[in-house]
Image 1 (spheres, one colour):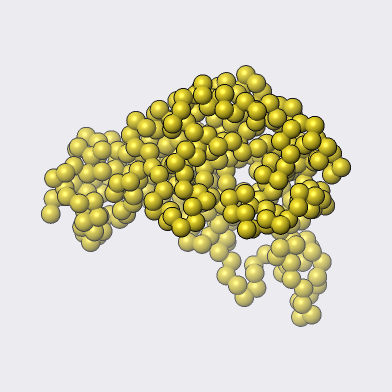
Image 2: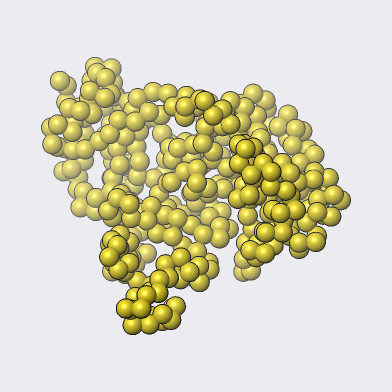
Length: 380
């Protein structure tokens, strides 16, 4: 399979915060993108919006139109109205040979409202996810008949921002909807890559030219340990290359001093590397799927004792609200942690406090599930 690498013009000019790169011309963007070696660009506000003009602008730089952003309003209009609203944009993408459309729900977003804190961003509750997901899927199904696939952009300040939002969105949408994985907007567990059963949750990830995975928790590594994967290995050599007179040589790619442990700096990725080397992907898959099985058991036990499960995720993350008789969520969490029997955390989901439970330790056993459930259900 041939991989073609493109970029978003936000690297040069920001459409939301126009003061960032506002004076950068379209010609500069196209010229520098070509010089870097990109084969295409996503549309931005400085790009022409008619096929002939856009082709004329891109042609001198041998660049393709990858896609373009569409601001959806599916929380305030149905799928038919949404499809009609994207008519001109769809026609442009088809004329340019694009095969995907970047879509984000913006009917109530706070992105661009620089004075509004993210804590006041909108949230969906209960059946609102079902309605939203059904409408998005209906639009995606219609777009597929036009040869265009939706890649949904989870975005800061919108209803799909956090990892729980992303999981809920993917759980309530159909196969015509893919996810645009933007690690700048969400740092979320890539550990599902190791599992054949769970990998579909990250469909579309393979189109990225690079991927960053935070291995903390699911891969049982230290905080701050992450892995950067790129199709262009020479970039890593350039990024970590260092040459000094007191080192044996300076041949990039040959001298281990230049491409291995970072001399006096901590090599935080060593623990992840050793886990991959020792267990392989199959071993890590078993670890990840075991965590999911543990959470499924916790979910079943809590639901049976009157807890309300508020996230619908195929992964090992559970958010739940206790029965009223157990009292305030945050007070309950403090009691559980203070008991020493288990560790959980408070979180906010869809505007309400929840108990957040993760399963990441490979030695967690049924007795630990019993201890956790017992601690959670213990009355003060």
